Length: 428
Image 1 (cartoon, rainbow, N blue to C red):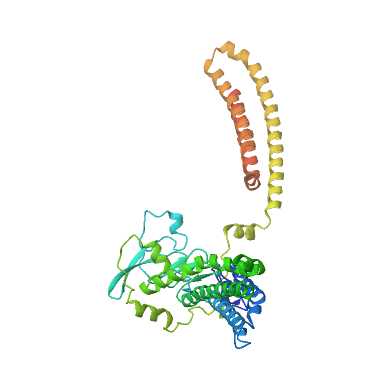
Image 2 (cartoon, helix red, strand yellow):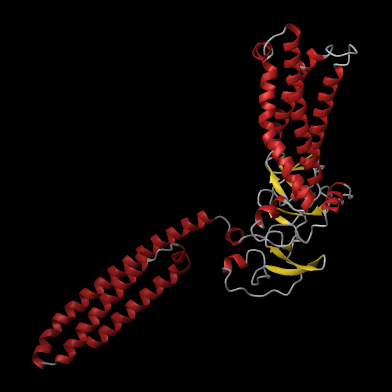
């Protein structure tokens, strides 16, 4: 059966509009980010920018403050959408291990070795050349591929991402090769928007102070929304502003967040650093490569292999009737065994009477060997009968009785009959 790629996608991503939009598994946090940006902007336009429309010359110059706020907010939301709803650089996973010569690794448990590559273990790392230097790349057992340089497997999205930077919960997406540019533009634009709202709110407080020669506290009491917006933007600047400065440093040195935190103490040489101007040009001016995944392409759905339990059910059908039949066979077997024991008891009574009749003869002949043989034969009959009952009642698997009930009963009857006959010959 043919399906779209996004319908059989093995990662944790969420798709919308028939696979045209791809989000991370934590895309539910995206509406929170939208509210944190749009709500303060709406409050600013209603309670601050609206009162500044006619405060500047020419008379309507104040409308520009509201227009800038609206346009800037829409721009930030568009950049947020471009960051969240696109492929960050996911490398398609292989359906089978690569054509490499495997080797056995005794340090890896057998269960882990056989998870994807039964009976063999690929080398965890291998060396590749990057900018004239050797770089060690790792093998991803989940995606069954050797990750390219600067690639890492995101445990949240369950994908290998090119130039993996980090997974951002605020945008609900991994940040990688194909959306890092938009992520930085989103963070830096949000920083500028916070500065703009904070400045215009402070300007409105200053206007209120100049109108009636009021103090700062009196002006704040007249416009509480301005005070709230200033406090909100001041706090937000510590986060988005600090993040903007940190990523400016990363871009200038051509690092990723993952590399910076992971290799900070290694003091290794950054072979990807080509100088600050070239690093900025690489991030903002190079053409983005198309996605390596066509999420709307048609593929043949893999048919899952039937498990051993499913095979057993297909062969044996419903297991409950089989258990009931086994129980019935077990009861029948017990009845047959008890009937045999009764018959053997009758035979034993006859033998006992015969033994009593011949005791006189044995006393007259004083033959100790004959008496010993007679006692051993009787004990052997009792032992065989008790052993048969013990085997029947102690077997923990009822199904074995369903398969072998007739054979056990026949063998028990035959053995008991033969033993009785043998004992009878001894007495004759």
